[in-house]
Picture 1 (spheres, helix red, strand yellow):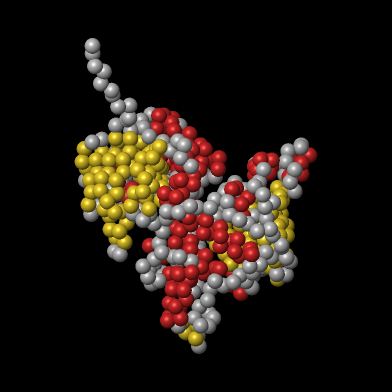
Picture 2: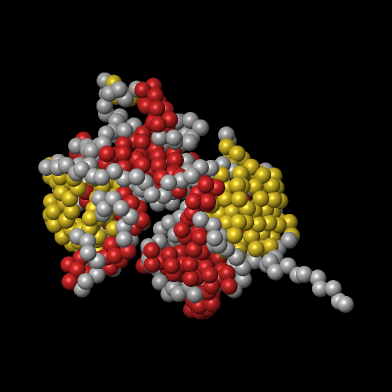
Length: 529
C-alpha cells in the first residue's frame, strides 16, 4: 500500500521579515517584529497612528535600514541600502502622497528614474508598452495625459503602473484609500484582486476596518512597535476584534449621542457662489444654516465643492455672490482673522499644509491663535514660559503622544498632529466650528476620540459644521445633513437618534449622485426631509 504524503496547500512566502528592530532618537519604532507575506495574497497591516506600520514597510522598501533582523525575499536573505535595491528584488511602495511630476505625461512619469531609455526617448513606443501593462492589470489610463489632468484615482493607477513596469512582484500600499472617493475605492479593490489573481502580492496598510475585512486575505496588527497578531485570516474576524488588537481595549463604534436642543442660528450661508482654483464654478447658489448646540453635516462625493465651501466660510476664499453670516455679522468681505476674533474654529482637511506649520514646535502650533492675547502676550512680547505651560497642559488634556512640546510637529503621526490641531481650536472655546474630514487617515482609537470631542462641542452649545466623505461618520454625529452635488444643494435630511434605516441611506446616496430630494420624494424613494 502506497503512503500518501500530504502536500501543503499554502502558497510559498514572497517576503519574510524576522526580528526587525528600528530605532529613532527616543523612539523604538519596531521592536523585534515578525511579518510574512505569501505569494498572490492581499495582506492587511493594521495599527494605531505611530504603531510602526509605515516604519516596518519603509524598511522593506529600502527607505530605512534596520538595526537588527533579517529580510528574506522568496527564501533568500537580502540587504537593502536604497529603494533601488528593493525594486531590483521586486518590491515597490506606493505612498499615501503620490510621487508624481504634474507637468509630465503618464509615460514620462513611469519612465522617470529608469536606466532605459538613456539618451533617446521614442515616446510612442513607450506609450504602447505602458498601455500594454495597464491592460494586463486593468489599469486604464491615457499614457499621453498630463498628471495634472487626471483624477486622484487615476493618479494612483499611475503609481501602480510605475511599480508594475519596473517588475515589482510585491506592492506595498500605504493608506491607498485615504484620498479616494467611494466609487474609486471599489474600482481599486477590483484592480488589487485582479493583480493578486495574477500572482502579485500586496501589503495593504489601512485604518479602515470595514475595508480590511472586505479586501484582505490575512491581517497582521502592530501596537506600539510590537506585533499583537500575525497572519490572522480576515474571513470571519470582526471589526471589534481587530480594533481591540490595535488599541488594546474595546472601541465604541456607535457613540451615545444625546437628543439635541438646538438654539439660535449661528451660521447662515445664503445663495453663495464661488470659483475653484482654476477659475471654474465650484459653488452655485449653495445655502445652509447651523444652529447652536447641533452638528450639521455636508455629504457629497469628493470634488463637488465641499473644500471651497469650507474655505469661503473661513474667509480663505472669496465668494463671488451671496452672503455668509456668523452670529449676524457678514463674513463675505472679511479675512480669516475676523472669523477667529468672532469665535470661529477651523479643522482643515489638509492638516500638514493648512492646519499646521510642520517645522514649528507643538508649542508654536498651539499658540497660533493666542499669541496676541495674555498670558501668552505680555506688553507685545511672547512669554515662552506661559506658552510652554499651555502646551504641556494641552498635551496632557488631549493625550498628544510626543516626547516634548518643543518637538517639530512634522515628526508627529497623523493622529497626534490632529490632536494638536483640535487642542488649539477647541481650547479657544469657539461658538462655531468647521471640521473638514477630521478623521481622514486616523486609526479607530483616534477616530473615536475625535468624535467624542465634536459631540462635546455640540453639548457645550457650539455650532459645528462637519464636512466629510464618510457617510457612516455623518450619520452617527449629525443632527441634519445637507447633500452637495456640483456645488448645489440637493436638499436637507434630518437624522434621528436611532440607527439610520436603509431608506435614509438610499436617499442620501441618490442625492450624492445628483438627484434632488424633491425628485426622490415624488418618485417614492425615501421618506425623510
